[in-house]
Image 1 (cartoon, rainbow, N blue to C red):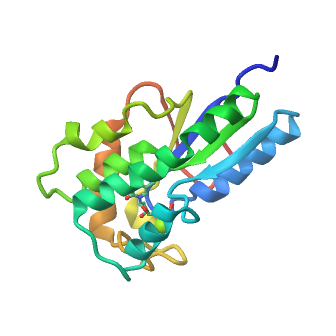
Image 2 (cartoon, helix red, strand yellow):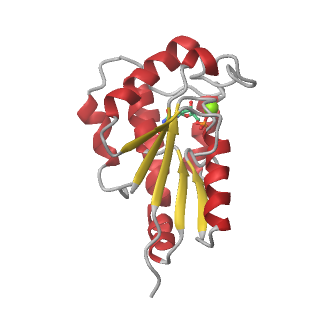
Length: 181
Ligand code: TMP
Ligand code: MG
């Protein structure tokens, strides 16, 4: 029987370097002979993912509560696949997870209660490690591609950053981006 894989989550604002760091971690694990796979949320390839993608590219509009629940449903769609992989000894490197779900919705400051925002995430797999790329929105706003999607404005990213900080606990590890973890 193989040892269970680890669930490693990378969080951060848009354009904070998550995708690059995920690839670095994956490469480093594979180089050490640790079987690992990358999972990315939102998974834009599923039915909920298609609608989420339209919303993010501003070609569909949805109430804040609906998009919040869709992001969560998008994670639920992959829950059993993730559990099977972990049980089979595969470590998962996950680009965004429930923390993004809660932080981005809470940053809208439209009265959605924090407990309400967290509740659809209950029952999803618990990460073994959360890495937060703590890159200031003032830096990310200068990055190539910033501004292409719905949430990519300086003001909103600053609100998201503060919400992420609200969600952190002492199990989180911080990284300042741009270098290998
Ligand atoms: P991406 O930039 O990593 O592709 O993520 C797409 C956007 O969706 C990004 O602005 C963060 C946002 N998001 C949420 O609002 N809720 C979520 O649950 C997730 C996973 C992402
Ligand atoms: Mg983005």
